[in-house]
Image (cartoon, rainbow, N blue to C red; front, side):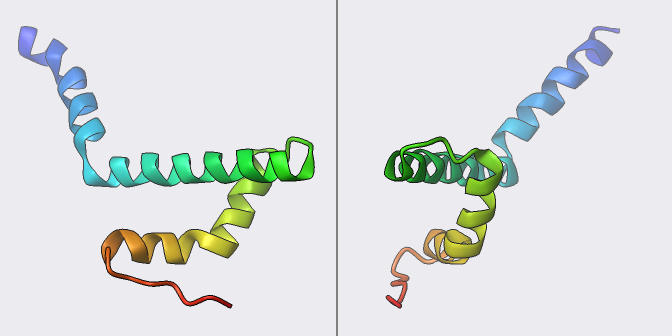
Length: 77
C-alpha cells in the first residue's frame, strides 16, 4: 500500500521535471514580465488576459524561436 500512496507524489515530481512544464513556466514568466512592463508604461494594470493575448500576438513566435535556436536573430520591423 505504501507504493500506491507515493504514486501521486511521483507523478507530481515527474510533471514538475518535464520539459513541457518547464516551457509552460518560462512562457508564463515572460507573460507576467510583459504584463508588468506594459502596466507600468500605461500607468494602470492591464490584467493577465490582455497581457497574455498581446504577448502571444506580438512576441510568442520570436520567443519560441529564440529558445529553440540561441543564435536566432529576430528581424526588426
